[in-house]
Length: 124
Image (cartoon, rainbow, N blue to C red; front, top):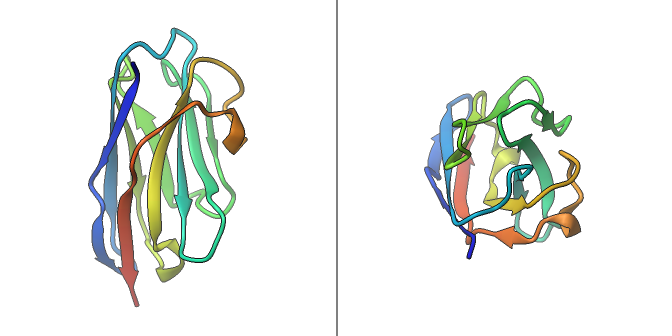
């Protein structure tokens, strides 16, 4: 059974940095895709970034491009989200999600496995 466990959330001032980690256990497939989503209070869950197994394909939402970077180890045991130049609007619960195969995209309904989330709060 696939399990995803996020860590690394916390409090940051505007302009600061945080690195989130997603520990992946279980067999998710040789063509797996892992993504980060976020959900702010009162808003829908939105796509942040995704990466294919081996890191050959990456995708970042326009709202975080040039500030956030997704990466993983080769075995995709851990997927990271490096967040720089954080802004108050980045405040949200950040979720890790995975699917066995498919596009490196933000289609929320295509992801089969989800973590419990980690809170990120950015103060101004």
